[in-house]
Image (cartoon, rainbow, N blue to C red; front, side, top):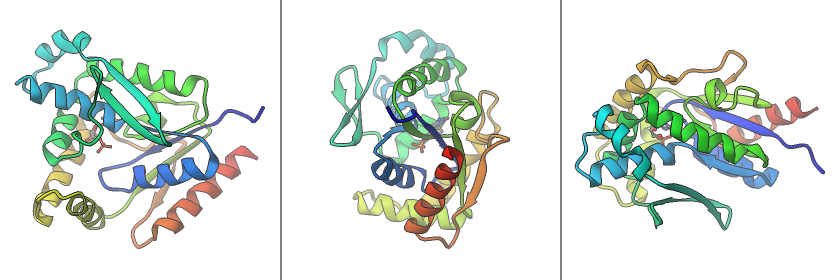
Length: 224
Ligand code: DC
């Protein structure tokens, strides 16, 4: 049997984590776990139920009513909220901010980190998020911290949202990105940061292929 591996990819909004991780997963034949989708789903639940996404007390009360299931369908992660596939509903700017808000609540993190660790228990995974290398998988074989300038990241995110049919301006995307990064990196519970043993890849000016290639080199180096 081949050795089971774990790859952690962290970084700020729009650094290309999910696009890169998906391609690497395909190339290496391992599973891609998108942890942001889980925070987004909790955010969606709160918005739908009229609960303020910053109301930790209220959210703690309803946490047990939120059932999350992750299923890999045709190699793509799908996420189910109490049985409903919400994978595309969670990709809006409103839910991005809701996710950032609920992710600051320690009890929400505990619940989701548990699910994430379980997914990595028996399978080789590449997992992306904000605290994968620091908290979720501290013993990951390879830890990569992906980043790029805020302007380049906002530009990538803007194009992605426009392609998905979202009606947004570049300025809205840029402001949202700065606000989310500030929130995510200054919160008390597991803030966004590079693990001490992570390798930082600044992808500004790099093509997607170059980033994937550089990442795979790092993964292979750790394996040998
Ligand atoms: O990666 P994303 O944009 O889908 O994540 C949405 C939000 O969820 C992000 O702003 C912060 C939070 N998040 C987190 O706190 N920890 C993770 N491991 C993943 C996401």
